[in-house]
Image 1 (cartoon, rainbow, N blue to C red):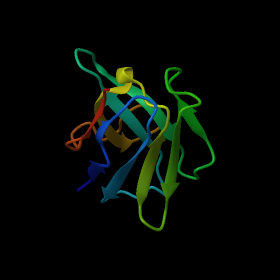
Image 2: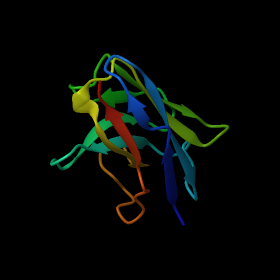
Image 3: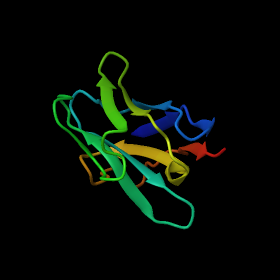
Image 4: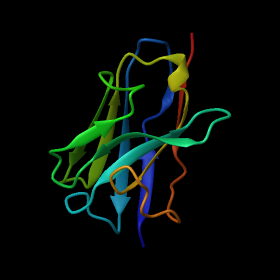
Length: 119
C-alpha cells in the first residue's frame, strides 16, 4: 500500500524558510517521480514542484521558481521541498504524490502539512 507522509510545515514570517519532507512507503523514490502540490485557501490543489526518479530533472510552478527547491534522498526514501523567501501567498496545505506533475496515487493522498506565512 502506497502512503505519503508530509511534515515540516509551520507558521513563519514573510521572507523566512521552511523545509518540507515527504516520506514514502510502499513506493520507491529512486524508481518514481514525485511531485509536491498545495491547496491554498479557496483554491484548487495545484502543482508546486516535481522531480524525476533520478533526481536529475525538476520543474516548478512559475510562482515558486527561484525560491523553492525540490530534492530527493534515496537512502531515506524521502523527497524534500526547500522553501525560501516565503510569501503570504504561499500559505496552504502542502501534499506530495507519485508522478511528475500528475498525481498517480489519487487514492493515497496524505494529510498534508500546513504552511502559514504571516507577519
